[in-house]
Image 1 (cartoon, helix red, strand yellow):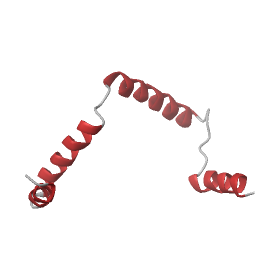
Image 2 (tube, helix red, strand yellow):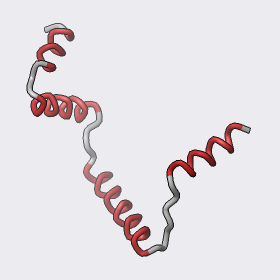
Image 3 (cartoon, rainbow, N blue to C red):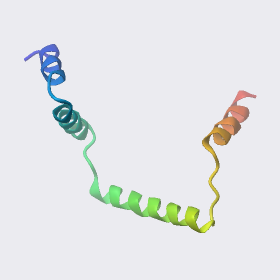
Length: 74
């Protein structure tokens, strides 16, 4: 089967089935690594707790990017 035929067939599927196809293809390119995912969950939980307790103050994204542009534009 040619790639164009495969794409045409896939795009004719209902949305839910297309999502399943895309997810399967992406997982084949970048398989999940459970141990790494578990470590990221711990990091995310820690960061969320720091934000909620006020230990860390969030910086708005536009401010972060403004500082980056200022630093690297000079």
